[in-house]
Image (cartoon, rainbow, N blue to C red; front, side):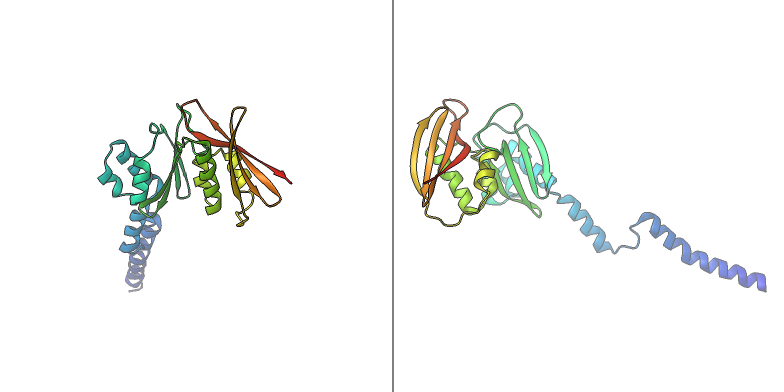
Length: 221
């Protein structure tokens, strides 16, 4: 009798132990089905996957496919890109994914296309801009600073110029645009304000190319 009771206890213990051991080994058996499905959805919505789906739809000129993974504004911006397609995926930092050029030079610090992913869609696209006047480039950068949008600034200016300008937040000071004048290598566009002036030094990569802001300088009265 004692042997029979001992065997029964061992059988019962085994029945309790092995399922738990299997759960520990797989790491999934103990999870509810809903949790597993949520994990699959999260993996499918990685920013890099979403961005690459939009990029491929753009390369195929497929607006319907692009609209399935991006906002209307993002689709319109991307499909209006003035340069050839970037040739390298530079990865994602958080939800910001970049596609860059390695064979051509374009204005600004983005060097291509930046996609901001939100959930399963690209919410916004930033891109290297083609601006045909020095004044337009300066005003575009000033507008980005006023909006507090560094990525927008990089569409039309070097990282150096953006870093200089964005050291301080736009404070609503009375800036007055004074126009642009030719200087060696390009044009200098000035904004005056009480106590001094800011100069945006614009350049072009070639005579027929668009303008971009290469650097920024200040003078005090």
